[in-house]
Image (cartoon, rainbow, N blue to C red; front, side, top):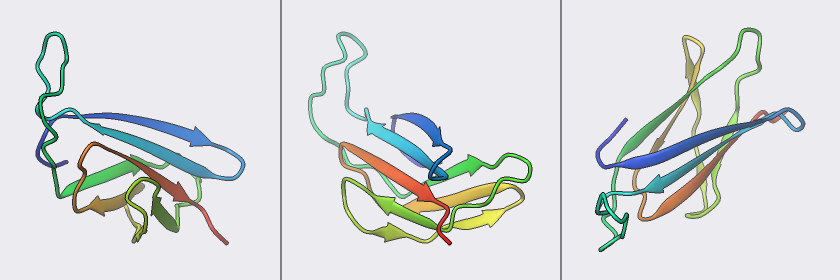
Length: 98
């Protein structure tokens, strides 16, 4: 959830238990031929990942492009993180840490 036009893909890995959320900021792209005229930062963004029944909730989130960590909350079977800003792309890694 948030402003802008983003391409989002979710990948799950079983071992170690983690989710990879790849976000690409397409705000400012022409429809055809898809040429990016300028980078327009977007945010804040809320990312929600639906957890499967009985699945352990992630306890940590890291930003692999911007660097740093984010708090993870869980509510009603959803893991939730909030990103303040994305310029071009970001990879959010949600992990179950013990």
